[in-house]
Amino acid sequence: MLFALTCIDKPDSEPLRLANRDAHLAYWGETGVVKLGGPFTSDDGAHMEGSFLVIDVESRTEAERLQAADPYQTAGLFARTDIRGWKWLLGN
Image 1 (cartoon, rainbow, N blue to C red):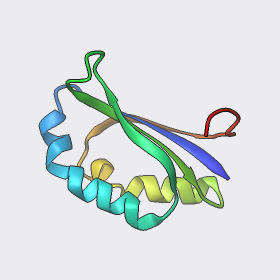
Image 2 (cartoon, rainbow, N blue to C red):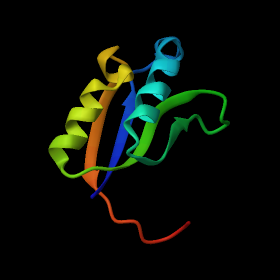
Image 3 (cartoon, helix red, strand yellow):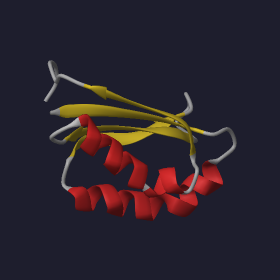
């Protein structure tokens, strides 16, 4: 089942994001469950402000477990995270 993870960074936390970015990318790459993902940015694209991932896992419990182990999460980057079941309808 697909789940969308919307994670919003704490204010003024881009240095924390950058310090954990390589570990975050390696972690999700190793899971093999990511269908699409990338950072939310400021309107001008200059600053990263959060993360959006669509993952394919068996259950919400698995989605929650994976998100909880994300290096960004364990570093305390996110102000809030939302996990929702998601149905792919449009796009490639």
